[in-house]
Image (cartoon, rainbow, N blue to C red; front, top):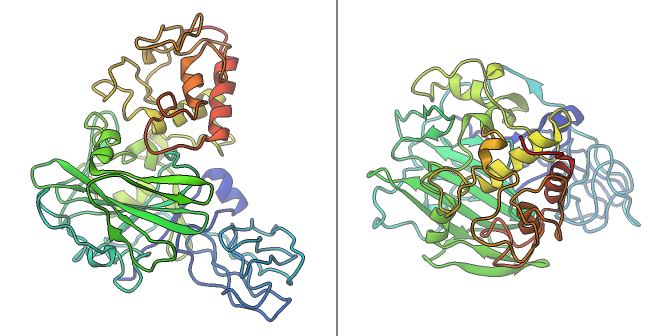
Length: 441
């Protein structure tokens, strides 16, 4: 069974055939051209075709959605953009002072009913049974990635993505799951998924062309979850298991934090089911699978018989809009979607925070207990402060939700863990929504 690799596309990105090249999965590669003339872009099979190698100048351009430039000098035509870590948009690479044309865009993905024909056998990515079991010291020894190329998943690992992602300081991510033999997913009444014992969830992070870490969440035989991560050294070919404590490293202009095992469970709360993002509304979205096929993820999972009971027609099920790219959802829906994916794992009934907020997407605004509600912990000495004060948004506003999202101060900013860089687009979206609010329901 060939390995399944894929990428998620928002409706806007799919319509424009635009997707950025993410870590190590862009296949096949485009050809290198002679100096001054880029090669052809690779077929759009994963996250856009990868560019040719670092020589000669003006090497191959990417496929639709932008491959990486062949060298540090960009081609002047369609395709590659300057810098080995940046993708050029389809048909629109940035002009450079040297080099020739980038490669042509790849073919558009083909719509199919489901993206994976049959469930791949998972014989190698086996979760540890207890928290005291030995965790493989190298990523390549986990059985969940290719032994000779640990940037890529092993056969039997299922790719997926979420419609509304968690912000991680601009890092791109790929997500995979490995279910135990015969394991099924139970969809709960609120749409969250209960994954079987023995499940392994894998998420890789890349920033500015540099592999950072590969995180694991595994469900142990007692039903509890354990999180741990593998650090990629700069320009490394394999990642090493991080110990239980947190660590950090300078990456470009930011300091990247590698979470401790306790940090993993601080965000992956019990109230949210530990497996963040695995819910019906998050996966009710299109995904480009291996072979350049695009299909709805829920339809694909149904075809693979991964659910304990039928979930119904995806067209009739809830779906989160992408907060930053949706062209059909309202400002409120997009803002609420962002709060759901970035805040509601703690801010929900039974969550980790000692406050009463409920920022889940399906909760009505009145039920969120935010609008014209005085903060229960602190007002930061802001006169008239409310969690959300209709019409007041920004770093100096009366809306504490906006104030904290606009902050970079460690004990004020939200989310409190996993980020130190403002998501300026998302903050502008939240502020636009609050500014438009005329009154509370």
